[in-house]
Length: 126
Image (cartoon, rainbow, N blue to C red; front, side):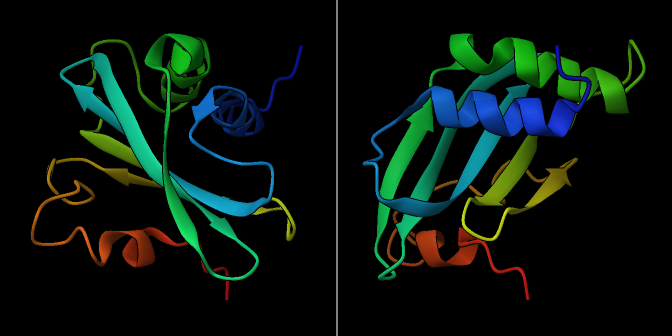
């Protein structure tokens, strides 16, 4: 059993990702919380030619990895973030995890940003 909660989280997101073809190079996945409950996921995969496609991961499939991850950062009873953005590039083997503690709308897809949100979330590890 792995003790790297970040690697386990990324692996769970990949294994339970829906909507991605096999040719993706990187992904950005938003994990949303309501209170202390995992509320859902949404994100995008990106191909080497720059295209993006929407994806999601089934919450029941990723919950054990999400719980282990958050338990490694938060003490029992502490408020969880409202969202976590996980970005991963499987070619470069680089990742970034960003917590959002208060702004639940930060990474939400809305009619106003639907044309630009995929690019805003695209992993760039420069």
